[in-house]
Every structure is written in C-alpha cells, then in structure tokens.
Image (tube, rainbow, N blue to C red):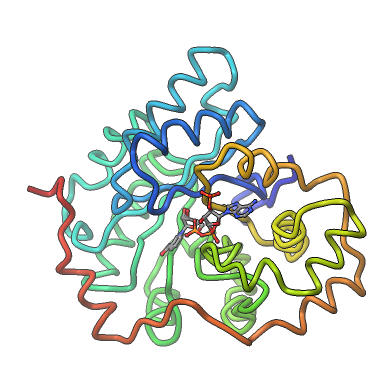
Length: 283
Ligand SMILES: NC(=O)c1ccc[n+]([C@@H]2O[C@H](COP(=O)([O-])OP(=O)(O)OC[C@H]3O[C@@H](n4cnc5c(N)ncnc54)[C@H](OP(=O)(O)O)[C@@H]3O)[C@@H](O)[C@H]2O)c1
C-alpha cells in the first residue's frame, strides 16, 4: 500500500475505508472485509456512533491473524460537544477498545475548539494519539488554530473530490507540512461526479470502473482517500487502484472540473450549532 508520510514521520496508507452514515452492524462487516482485502486504514468519529463496531472488527481481524494492531491506521474525531470534557479521549479509546489511535481529529470548528485542540495535544504527548488533525477548518478559525496551537495539525480532513480540491487551504497549510485527507471522495454517491465523461473515457482505457479512476486521481493528488462503502464489491474495487497511473495530461484534464461544485455549505450559525448537538451516548 502506498503511504503519505506526515511531518512527524508517521506513515498513513493513502487509502482507507470511511464509515460515515454506516450502521454499527454494517460497519463491523465492512471494516472486517476491508481489512481482509488489504485495507490498512479506517476512519470513524464519535458522531458516527460506530466506534465500537470498528473496534470489534479490528479485534476480530487481529485475533484471526489477518493484521496486527501496528499495521492498521485508525483515525477518529472528537465531537464538538466534548471539547471541554476531560474524559473524551479516554472514552473514545474505550469505545474503540484501543490504547491509542493513529490520528485524532477535532471534528468541527465549533464551540471551544481551542480547548478541543489542546485536549488533542495532551493526548499526543501522552501517547494516546500518534498524530493530530483538524476537520472542516477554514478562514479565520483555521488561522486562529494555527496561531494558537503548539503542535501544528498533521492532517486536515475536508471535502475533496475532482469538483473541489480546496487549493487555497492546501497551499496555506503547505508551510506546516499538513497532509490532506479528503471526504466525499466519490461525491457521497453523486452519480453525476463518478459518471463525468472524462472518467468514463479513462475507465475504458485502463479497464477500471469510473470510481476506481476517481480514487486513483485522489491518490495521485497526494490525498489520503477514505471512500465509504458497505457494498463488498465496491470495497474490493476501491482497494484495487494501484496497478495503473494516470498521466500528467489526464490529471490536467480532470483538473478542469475543479471549482465547479461543493456539496457541503455550512454558514457560521450552522457550524456553531454542532457545539450544542449532543450525542446519544453523552446521556
Ligand atoms: N470530517 C467530516 O466532516 C466528514 C464528512 C463526511 C465524510 N467524512 C469521512 O469521509 C468518508 C467518505 O465520505 P462518504 O462516505 O460520505 O462519501 P463517499 O465516499 O464519497 O461516497 C460514499 C458513497 O459512494 C458509494 N460507493 C462507494 N464505492 C463505490 C463504487 N466503487 N462504485 C459506486 N459507488 C460507490 C457508496 O455506496 P455503497 O455503500 O453502495 O458502496 C456510498 O453511497 C466517510 O465515510 C467518513 O469517514 C468525514
């Protein structure tokens, strides 16, 4: 598996399985089958309500000798209502049944996100997180976080796909060496994206599916990509993208789609609401 090296030398597999909006039952099955198929990275979050399922699938794969803990990169995200809860990291590890995660994010730039980030920095120093991330940060809040943080984020997770590559944010973070992990890599199921003519043409050329072409584009952009799926055929196909490479001309042709669509638009008011949206397990 190709990897992206973070500025602290931690290596992240370029491809992982995403688990947003996947039930615990399906998450357990998907993550287990992904690990069996050679995936070595899993992305979850407090708010997906499936961290326990991720932990169970990983434990099963470890017990069966499919992987070791050290071979699998697990990322999760602390939800905004928990930024001032001193037990949030330990509770997260408990749900995942892990001693550490490989990457720990704050999920949203809402509420007291600096307290959330300081909690992450403490987890890093305590060995409970091997790298740190921010998710959905931009503009002034991104600047504040960069100015006030001691350990600059190793990774930013944000919407990224051929319609939207957030070049400005990536350029801003380049000086820190912050890597990009893109969410909605396949447009969250938008067939319009995957069925763009350019992907159909390249799928014919390389004898791959359109989705595989899109995912290969992500990895060649240097993005860590985490397509979500509960379909075993899709999980297998999404992992089978490393036996071909798009040419520079083909990458340039795909670049023409950049800037044409963003699926998620949250204004300040909406983002701040996340800090009051408590998760069921908070009681
Ligand atoms: N930080 C954040 O705020 C944030 C926000 C959103 C997402 N994320 C993360 O990013 C991950 C990816 O985003 P996402 O899952 O929402 O969207 P996505 O990966 O762009 O798309 C998932 C959709 O694509 C379908 N799909 C997957 N592989 C396919 C294939 N080979 N051919 C055709 N369709 C395919 C899936 O259906 P099937 O199940 O049928 O395969 C599902 O409907 C999430 O799972 C999550 O881990 C983070």
